[in-house]
Image (cartoon, rainbow, N blue to C red):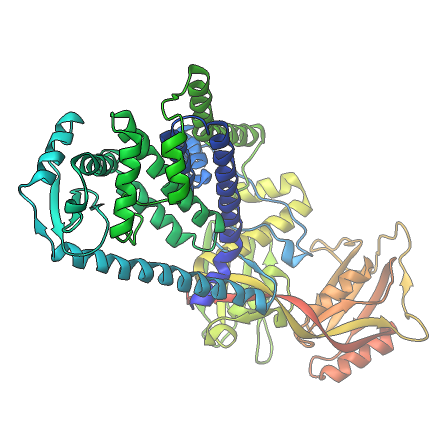
Length: 605
């Protein structure tokens, strides 16, 4: 069931995921270009650019577009003033029917394509779990150190910490834990951060070194760096397969430490003392195993020392660069929202410009009941088994038709192109009686015969979908087929004469000549009047006797008159012989890829 569900949703999910990935990639590249422009400014600016690029992976532009559509008020206008309309489509092309909103149709080309979504989902899940468990075991290590730590209530470390908190304007005191591990000093937690301090490091630090390290850790707390790091860890877990995500994490860590370094030095700490304090920590302590536990030794140590000792850390953003960043941020948010507003407005304008909306009407009355063993009232059928279906004016009637047969007629496809479905699909017969309303009939007559034929077909499909709760998708399968070819002596029928009205041919219900058309009758008879070979191929494909798709390999391009007749009791071999003897054509058995309709779900009405 899961592979089938993934195969059904993959054609809609894959484009959306692909769009989100390339949009996020472009966003990261754009952020990288901006950091190059701002490379001589404060590191905190570059850090927020990288963080915005990380958060973008969690916020598809499609959500902002949807927000724009919502703000436009389209959700209240859709369908409120929809007028009556029936979409016009050639029913002779069964797999180009308009998609009905009640029948999800997903195109899946091959068995390999059907398996691919499930395989990709398994690969992604494995990678996701590997990342999660990797972080989990590291987190357990830090949690164990926290549990074994003791609160530090006094001492020069606490005094220095409280003094720096007052200087920095921090109202809430930070809890300090004394750890017996060799982990570096670090801030643990997001909502209630605690400072983990290694027990043996204080005796190796002078007061100036101690204050510099504590000032660095308080910078992490004020900036809420642990929260930002946790957000990026979620991005890494979900998009672990994207290399830019991991590269982005390294940039975030690097600029985070540079930003804290800048704040410490701007607060008055000596560059050399601060650099010495970091080196002392690196000499006696081990770095934090998680990015969401802010320490003091992150990023490339050599570059960081050079950055601290030589970098001009006091250059702020000028007005032009502030304006540039503000415009860029505004465009990143406003552009997709504006697109949603404009797109919805344009769609609504196009809809209002049309005379009608593409809505398939329902039958005024409709009844579908299990067959009782006798023909439904209105049919006169001799012999058993019996089944029949017909349009009688504004009324669709069928007796003893299985759901398989109803689908075959409604979609104009051979029975071998319908696969799957429940056990009763081809065994239980139903009587169907449906009547169109007067307004629907009037609209069909007003628009012409071609419109009416297509409209009736769509109404038939909609009725089956609603009453039988149909859902299906389409696949391509290798199936046995018949290839219709011309025999050696050529066809035994003649091209139709231009302007022939066929006075002795097929009649309408009022007895008038039908003109160019094809008709089949119970008892095994097909009559063609001025029709292309493609119509004969369709009739043979839909035949209840061949049970195979027929492919046109004749190369005949004119319109023809022909008559083909056989006895229903005859087997397939007799039908093949009739085609060859009466028409001069041959049905050669072959195998070929054929698009089939796969029933995913159906319920008894």
